[in-house]
Image (cartoon, rainbow, N blue to C red):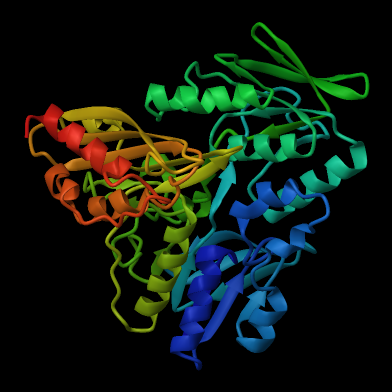
Length: 448
């Protein structure tokens, strides 16, 4: 049996490796359009911040290891262009423009996502970069070193944009951020969002929300980003306007797609064709709070889904529960985290959301070095169910968010979450943890 995989990053190589472990005799072929496999994309902003650290250190396992030690038929520079599910054939082109055709018994589409590139004149100028693949990170790092970059403009203010903002500031580069939307971090509670915005200002980051980007033009030896009411000079531009799933040839093959054109899969990662699976940033998932399909492209889901595909291909039935949208990122001295639904998302899903915002200390009151933790917690007025949590603080946020994530995964209500047995020691938090305090205040607002 031939198990053919399109895509050689998190989901694809996780599936390939586990399938080979389960069935050493299985023919596993991986087609990767680039020359980079199995790398930590999430680590790129932090690597870019360190000029002495090579970008190749982000590679978790190189191609030779997969080929020679795990006996996976990994083929680099193989760009898939079409799938014929009826004939069970994949067609594409090698780097030298030589066409190839491969048959399969089981197929995994793990093509990931691509950066959204807005329709802005001048976006193809030298010095304008997205950041999604390892090669993007490689080219950004080389450009900074070669061009002595002093000023950068970041288009977008999402996770990647904010992480890159910190990375560039760490290298002494002036940064201006710009986006068409008027709200900074629109998914975040406004009180928590203000804390993040103040941190940007404190670190000399110019913020320009509500500015449509009209064009990027060459200006002497640099560029000028022309917006509605401001022009921003830059030596480089980072485009961080989000990502979209690489699902085009899946759609052309007649496979079902859903939210944002992500490939629709069941809890065994099967697509609408029973012999084709999909996993990673190109595929959707089920949200455990709403029960509906969602598209939340994050690393843990990609790796976990790759393993599950391998199990199912090898005859070991494995089902995934779904996701609750847990995410965390660092912005200068802040830890910023979320899980579950925002009030707006909850209302759209048919809940009657109630939200509280609580400010607490990260340590017991007598402990030195304590800082503020801001917690926004949302519950359902009708059922008392916990719906979502957001947290911002300088310490103690990144791992705390996992507690409500587990609660959401298990469909707990706010009352049950308030009763959970948290650990306590003065250096790590007050006796009433910020999450428990927020739950208590939410219970009062819910009338429980």
